[in-house]
Picture 1 (spheres, one colour):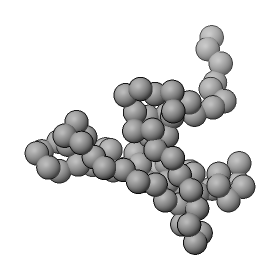
Picture 2 (cartoon, one colour; picture 1 turned 120 degrees about the vertical axis):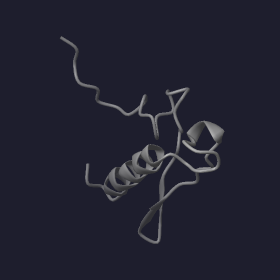
Picture 3 (cartoon, rainbow, N blue to C red; picture 1 turned 180 degrees about the vertical axis):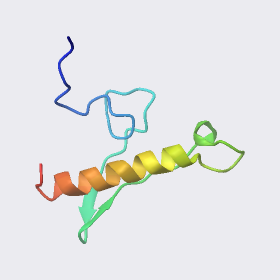
Picture 4 (cartoon, rainbow, N blue to C red; picture 1 turned 90 degrees about the vertical axis):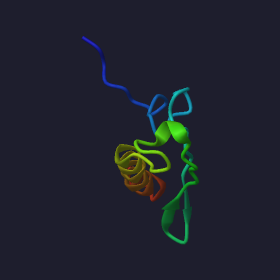
Length: 73
C-alpha cells in the first residue's frame, strides 16, 4: 500500500519537481495570492484559448496557497 504524499513537489500547478507542470510560485500582495502564468499553445483547447481545466487548476492552487501563505496549514 502506498503512503500519502506529504509534499507538493509533483503538483501539476506548483510542483518544482514536475517537469511537465506549470511550476508556478505564489506570494501574498496586499492580502491577495498572486502568481504569473503565460499559457503556451500546449495549454489551449482551441487555438489561442486556454483550456478551462488549466484555468481551474490554477484557481484551485491560488485558493490553497492563499490559506498556506496565511499560515492556515
